[in-house]
Length: 254
Image (cartoon, rainbow, N blue to C red; front, side, top):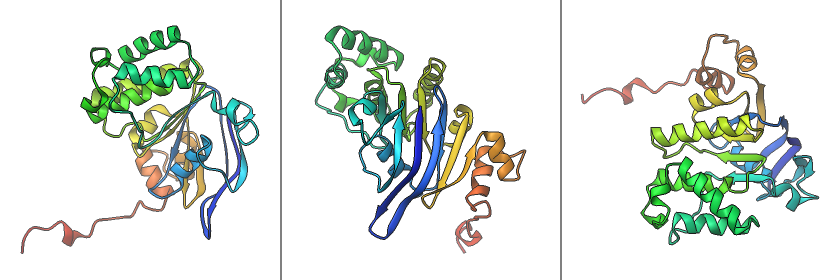
């Protein structure tokens, strides 16, 4: 459902993404991991058409993003790491606005709004201004808006930031349900426990290069750590397993 070939992004002399290749199958939850500054968000912005690659090709549902941008983007839902909401609108008004952008008719917008607000436990807040919402509630409204048009591909950058345990559970349940119905989910997160729980395949990017790709078992094999969890495997593969805080920083007053 997603194919990336030789994807590169260069800023003057800085190579942010260095010719990466990967593919994501229909209905798969695919984890995209890496340290800060590794190239995750740059890659995602190219996947959704917000950045033009320096080189390489992106295919979404078989559509070449560069040659058929509208057709490719039409099947994608996207939630960035720092979503923007029109906070002077109510939740219902914001979803109606987003539904119109997607070209949905009023009846479909109303039906999907009711369904999604109920799922994300926001029905009682549908007519409240978004500016009164907590961060987690705003995150759930953003998720709902990106799902209005039933996207075939859902691309999410750091979805769990600011969510309370209930919100995180709702979101994980949503991802599992979507995957079971054939939606492809591309998930970038620093929450390795979430990635380990949800993702059937993962890639780790570091310094703009993919340093590991595969199932959890395959990543464990690459890290020579068959009994490790994803955090341990990630730290070994990125060369950070031996990092320690200097003991003098942890001591009490002299």
